[in-house]
Image (cartoon, rainbow, N blue to C red; front, top):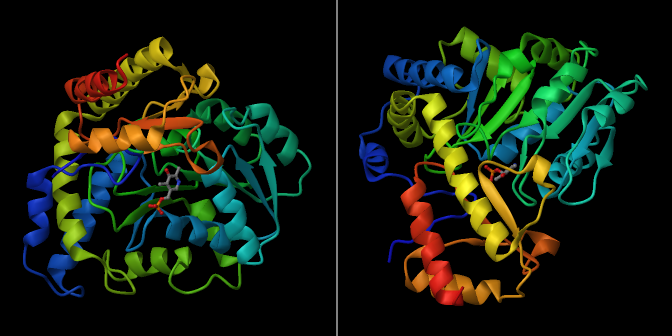
Length: 356
Ligand SMILES: *Cc1c(COP(=O)(O)O)cnc(C)c1O
């Protein structure tokens, strides 16, 4: 049975979008491939609010995150972590032999501009990584406030993970001054999994030129230069089928209108939060609640796995807590193309199952 996925990726993909993936293949060195990749990139520039080059990668978002920290750290990276996905950046640095320090907060808390300022004032770092929307704790970091601090450090490359927010929350890449902004297809953008997307600023390009060992597949400089030289083509064979779906879904996103899309995400979030506060409690600091996934404190000590089994029989799925937060919290994602009625349907079923 098809389940409505209220999990933080992969999300449900609408049938007309999925159908795009049945189109016949084209050669990846053809003019058609160049045109497809150019169209997709130009539409993504609108979603990212950027004039910078868009890089498409046949990988999930994790690939471009690793590529970013490896390709652009010259001296030392400051990794700001508010949970599992922030910790992932640190692991990538360590595994790639890149000097890095981790700055972490208690689960449920956010990174403050002051923390960033204090770290960068030491002069030790030339790159920072930040998770915009931490999918484990349901925290959305205050990137607009942090961008004010980043303006004091024009030489520092800013890498931002917007995997679970881009397309669901406004992230104005150029206005914020983000150098490498990364997302995946399978979350708020409402597309199938299998590709990652990044914007890359000139500052990031110049930084990468100073790094000798950037690897091969996720060498961001190589991707950037190849696109410029070969008219939007890529060094290796991309997932053409997913790009058909992207091309089509991006039109739908732009037709809906970005502001309407962000409003719809907020509306779903507000509804889930109100429900959570009435029946349970919200896990993160309420000042920094995510608009795309709500992490709920399991104050009633319900059996989350059992709840999910019952929900499955009714055609729904939610997520248990992430890692250590399993059973202590659970997560309802409200990202992609669902609307308020879908969310109400889910919550009615939870109420019914739990007798709330
Ligand atoms: C899902 C997620 C990732 C990992 O993305 P993949 O596309 O699965 O590699 C990274 N960061 C955040 C915040 C996420 O939610």
